[in-house]
Image 1 (cartoon, rainbow, N blue to C red):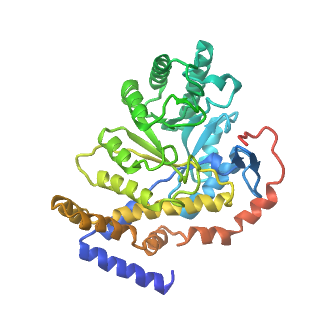
Image 2 (cartoon, rainbow, N blue to C red; image 1 turned 135 degrees about the vertical axis):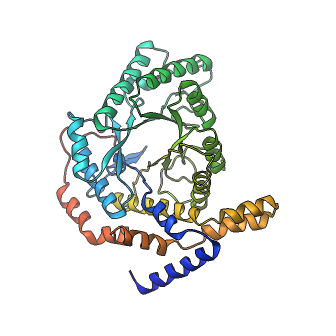
Length: 410
């Protein structure tokens, strides 16, 4: 670590001591932060118009796990990898669990796919065909069996169900079908597991989406069971939605189960977290840290997961960059002087209240994160470490051509 970074860290330490903030406690919280990366973020992907292949992109689940393990090795905070079924289906999930552990990671959330098969053209749980609804349920139950084999504790659910035209489907009947299906899934969950219900206000149903917003998702959770919670994807909201308010509301209701981190400018762009609206991510983490520090909030168990499509940036570098930004957002939120903020809010000092947040947000936390990584035995700059590692050159040379039988979503 350079002398300049050391001096900047010392200056920050002096400032935090003056504010009465616990620097060592902040560092410990950063060290135990966990961010799950998705298997599908390491393979070739594209837009609706085509798949843009990259040199070195993972061709099957085994290569995706290897890349995820490399990201964890460099960042120290990505110990789990989400899988998507059937994209990541293998013959022996017990062996897969061991493979992940041998790489120094574990299998995280299991994501069923009930939107890709031709049967689901008109929906899954909201399909008018009882046969299709049963097929969808059977697939989710099969994914629950996979959860047990890999010791996953999270079933991550997103449904593409919707309609394109008025009159195409009956709103209330579709709602009833969804309620029934979700309850059956809940009953099938293994001990200690939970299901996270995601929402999206559009796509692919242009007229109706069956789970269109966080309120609908929360309603379904309430009527499904105690192990159902809401999954917030940062790209799944209308423009100008106050996502941090949604987060605070769900925390207070005990319904915030997890995040899919990404960013968007117009719609569900799935671009690198923080690339468009970094202040929003900070404000979201501000609500999370406030809840972590609130003794009245119990059993706060949030799954922090990345869900991005890296089509322009190199996939590994984009993933590491994303993780580093999420770390920085959390670090800045930990620097908020909460006693001063509460006092200024009580005194109705609007300018001071906002300034306290802005002071934390504009703090350069790179020296702090560099020190944290150094204490964890890591290189202070994960992207630089990756570029110097030779890993990309190695996989670009090795991963040529397609693998027979490899799962694909491109």
